[in-house]
Structure formats: structure tokens, C-alpha cells
Image (cartoon, rainbow, N blue to C red):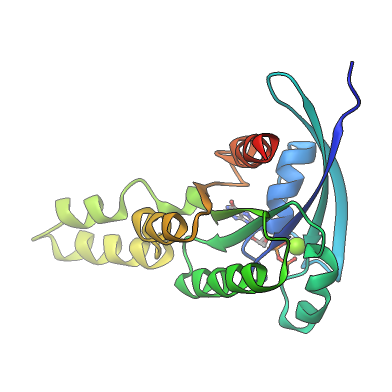
Amino acid sequence: PAKPIQIKMVLLGESAVGKSSLVLRFVNDEFQDNKEPTIGAAFLTQKVRLDDSVLKLDIWDTAGQERFHSLAPMYYRNAQAAVVVYDITRAASLDKAKSWVKELQRQANTNLVIALVGNKLDLAGPAAGAAAESAEGDGEAAEAAEATEGRGRQVQAETARAYAEEQGLLFLETSAKTGEGVVETFTEVAKKLDLA
Ligand code: GTP
Ligand code: MG
């Protein structure tokens, strides 16, 4: 069997969007409800099998807290892939993701593969909007539905997807909690690299 191709990958995004949780789900198939913030960065590896090759991902999971921002170039320098994460329940985290994308486009490898990932899909709620609609006319139920919506999705997938397409980024939504979209994220990135 051929030696795996080694790929340097970096995860970036605001603190608490779930970068470490995504990596933990991908590498160990685990989830922790109260994951502590990353200090500096964490390093993990995982293999991805494609049709006729194996990639070994060297994953740098960076710390999103602002005081660590200046360390980021060490991790995205020479990276072939970047996963920029936001939290679909916090619109401000998409703005931060966009600023990371800008920084990568200015400073990183020109053929860097970038994926924009909206995490915490499990909190979108099975259509908080639909609940609000069906509760129309029923004051109390409508109020409850609205409160749920407040904790639910703030960033529509189509909004983020349109931005990602315009910038030439892969786009996926994930839940590190349920595992939805997680393997797909790393596999999609690997596929795009494989062709490069
Ligand atoms: P920094 O290391 O500070 O940059 O944060 P991070 O982006 O690594 O976030 P982390 O993975 O530590 O997750 C922050 C919190 O969100 C933790 O309490 C996680 O349990 C929670 N979390 C992460 N992903 C998900 C998810 O998909 N769904 C839900 N419901 N919670 C999540
Ligand atoms: Mg972390």
C-alpha cells in the first residue's frame, strides 16, 4: 500500500463555535458537553481514505480567544487546508469567520483549500419558524415558539452558502454533538485537495 499523503490542516474561528468538538468527533467519535477553551493550539492526526489514496491529516486546532489571534499565522502558514468554523446560533461568529477567510486569502498559501463550516446544527431546532407559524393566534404557544427561536438558528444556510460560493469555499453545516456532517467535512476537503 502506498504511503499516506501528509496534509497540514488548520481550524480557525471564534471561541466556542466548536472547533475542538468537531476534531474530537472526527478523530475519536466523542463529544463533551462542557469542553474547555483551547489554550494556544492542539495537534491531532487522522487518516482519510479516498477511492485510491489515503491522506494523513495533521490537524492544528487553534484557540479562538482573541488573545491567541497573533499565534494563528504559525498554524496556517504552509497549510494546504483550512476549516473556518462559525456557530449557526450566533450571527457574530459568521462575521468573525469572514474575517478569518480574508486573512487567509491575504496571508496563506494561494492554493489553500478552505471550507466554511456552520456548526451546532442540532440547535437549529426542527423548524422553530414552523412552530411559530402553527402557534399563530395562540398567544402563549407563539411566545414559547419565539423563545425557542431565540436560542435557535441565527444564520440561514443559504446566506452562508451564497457567501462561500462567491469566495470559492466549500460549505457545510455540522453538529459535533450528533456527528452530522463531520466526516463529510473532512472528506470533502480531502477530495478537493486530492485533485490539486
Ligand atoms: P476555543 O477552543 O475557545 O476556540 O473554542 P472551540 O471553538 O474549540 O469550541 P469547543 O469545541 O470548545 O466548544 C464550545 C462549547 O460548545 C462546548 O461546551 C461544546 O460542548 C459546545 N459545542 C460544540 N459543538 C457543538 C454542537 O455541535 N452542538 C452543541 N449543541 N454544542 C456544541
Ligand atoms: Mg478549542
